[in-house]
Amino acid sequence: MPMQKLLSKARQAIQDFDMIQENDKIAIGLSGGKDSLTLLHILSNYRKFSPQKFELIAITLNPGGVDNAPLYKLCEDLDVPFYEIQTNIKEIVFDIRKEKNPCSLCANLRRGALNDNAKKLGCNKVALGHHKDDAIETFLMSMFYEGRVNCFSPKTHMDKQDLTIIRPMVYIEEYMTKKATKEYNYPVIENPCPANGHTKRQDVKELLSKLNKDMPGVKKNLFGALNNSEKLFIWDKDKIK
Ligand SMILES: Nc1ncnc2c1ncn2[C@@H]1O[C@H](COP(=O)(O)OP(=O)(O)OP(=O)(O)O)[C@@H](O)[C@H]1O
Image 1: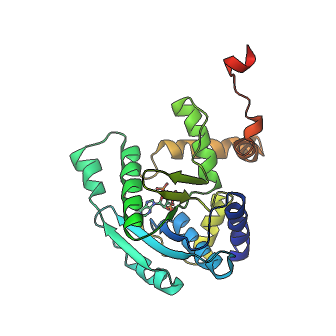
Image 2 (image 1 turned 30 degrees about the vertical axis):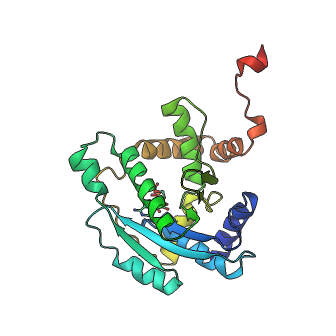
Image 3 (image 1 turned 135 degrees about the vertical axis):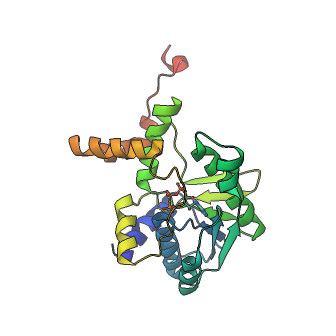
């Protein structure tokens, strides 16, 4: 996967949603997974020719007991200051709260810790590694499991913390992050989570992949629907009556 193709898609999303401003200090949430490693690589390159000058750092939250040494080395090579934060998220989720559905608590704790640390380190933005397939899956999951039409936004301002969350990879398909990981030999850190791979998201991912084989274009159309807010016709009783 040539860096040029990744950069062109990221640049388009950054421009479409006005994600980066002059003098931003952006913290990349670096989990050590393929997606945020791709994001780190993209933003460290984008920084070189971006019309807006901005600063980058990477933050990794260690849920407990993970060896993140390879991430130090990569960030050094890419000239991105790296901060590893030790947390007890694993202990809280599995030993203290003994969660039956651990994913949402874990995601909330990670989000909170990432934002707090970004703020402490002087950042005004946090960049996350969500990509196009994540968006389509989230869009469907919200309908399937929550009964509402919803998805995360490419850019969200958190008023309470005065922090903006950006997702520069929303136009990048997951297969591209897989290809980049192989091609550039990213040091992927094994996800230590016991729930890894047995999640609702995984079920929806598999369903979508099957649907896309039977009905080619289904993913493209779902992404189109997400981007076409004017045509998101909903049964609004007040408008119809
Ligand atoms: N432990 C962590 N430390 C820092 N950032 C994180 C961590 N876990 C998740 N993030 C950030 O939140 C994003 C979404 O988290 P999620 O668990 O859904 O990851 P993912 O889709 O599997 O991506 P990745 O391949 O980067 O792990 C990640 O792409 C990353 O930017």
